[in-house]
Length: 275
Image 1 (cartoon, rainbow, N blue to C red):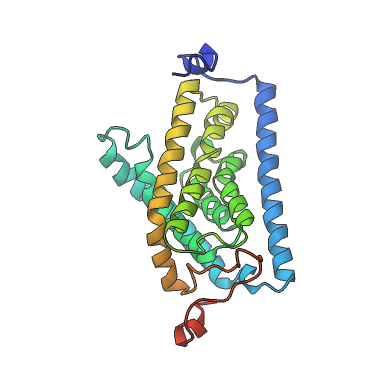
Image 2: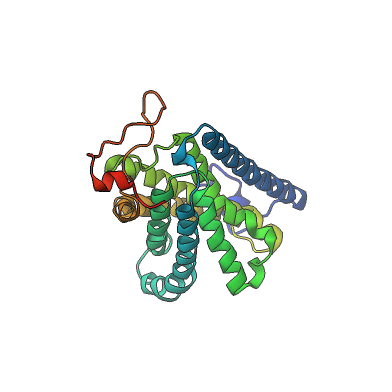
């Protein structure tokens, strides 16, 4: 399938391995990308808060949500998922390749994003999950040098949140599903490709063929995208139990200014959720 597009060493049985100087250079670029995106997110949040946009300020509730869901992501990812769900689906053709076992993970991640809806939320949750994995299980990936892989799973989602300017999960129904599809894909790519092609070969010497990297990345993009898109409506329903305003846009699409809350006045509307 790929023979006409890539050299044989990329698609045959030969492990894909870039020269060491190239691997180091690409690794440093990955680190720079992560740091740059996080700096943009931090700067954007500070500017929004300075302009008096209360919806952009991180609250105590947001920090608690990150902590709780970061722990839940770890409990599912390395305990429930690896020990129970993955063995159950091993016999189903392509189920593991398409990351069916990641659907509950994506539901938890989408729930956290739906509650917080601020740039930085995705990276905070997935990186906390990654740090807990390193602390609890150690192994060859316990070094801080693997942190870029943990960050890559969240920074591009946060870049999407930043670009959407408060509109992510601002509408229930099809728009929320589309947001979920995009964020699921961004969680998988470029993180899986970078980990398989650059980070693991550089830090542990573990290599795969070009075909394996391409197919693994493609399957993960599709699986994570569908998992997040499918779980987005349920994530919104759960998020509304914490904050009733979830599912209503904070920003008017035409002017870019805060939009009026479409909910009717009343005790629930006045409460506006926990803060």
